[in-house]
Length: 79
Image (cartoon, rainbow, N blue to C red; front, side, top):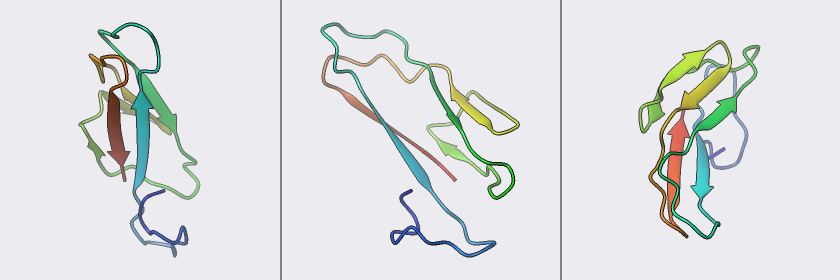
């Protein structure tokens, strides 16, 4: 949870989550798929950066975050 910074949100407040993906392996990764889920009972998906590949129910998927060279970090965010 990136926003709100104190981790506390009231009903109706926007919240933003950030996902860090790092290639800690020994070889570059040509494609990387990232999936995140959230509770539909208290959160509604609005947008993502980079743009997500799909949102189905409570699942957000980025089909290709790569390529990721060794040691490279990719940041994904959604709200």
